[in-house]
Image (cartoon, rainbow, N blue to C red):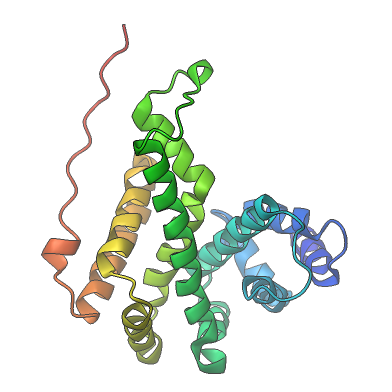
Length: 247
C-alpha cells in the first residue's frame, strides 16, 4: 500500500505524461480506505494535490479531460476530509485556511462553475434541446436527465459541497466563519448547497447509512452556524419506497 500510494504521489509531482492517470488511480485507492488517506498525507501528497486544485501547472488539453481531473481531485479531497484523523486531518484543514483562505474561495468558485453547468443541462433537457434517450440502457426521461446532469459534472459538484460542510464541522471557528462570508459574497444560497447534498445522499444505498447521517448532521450544523432555517433548508427526508416491479 505504502509503495503504491507513494508511486502515485511521485507521478503526480513530476507531472509526467501519466500524471492524470495517477490522480485517477489515487482517487480509487483512497475511497473508503482510511489507511491509504493517512499514507497519502504522510508521503507529502497534499502539495501536488492542491497545486492541481488551484489550477497551477500544466493543464489537460481538452475540456473533458480537465473536468475528469477536477472530479478526481475533488474526490480525493473528500476522502481525505472524511477519513484522515489527528495530525493528517489538521494538515488538510490547514491547506484551506492558509494564504487567507484562498482554497476555500476556490472551492466556492468551482461550486459556481459546476452548479451553472448542471443547471444548463437541466434547462437543455427540459426545453427539448437534448432529445436523445439511450433506449439500449432502458432509461426513462427522469433517468436520462440524471445521466445528463452527471455528464455536466453533478458528481464533482456534490463532492465540492460535501467537502464544504465537512470543513465547516472540523471545529475551526475561523474556517466556518469564512465559509459563511464566502457564501454571501459569492451569492451562493445555502438552499443550493443543501439541495445538492440531499441529492447526493438520496442516491447512496442503505449500506452508506452512517455516511448519510453524518453528512446530513454536518449540513444542519453549517446551516445553523450561517443563520439559516434548519427545518426549511434541511427537512427530514421522505422514506424510500420500493420500486415498482417491471412487467
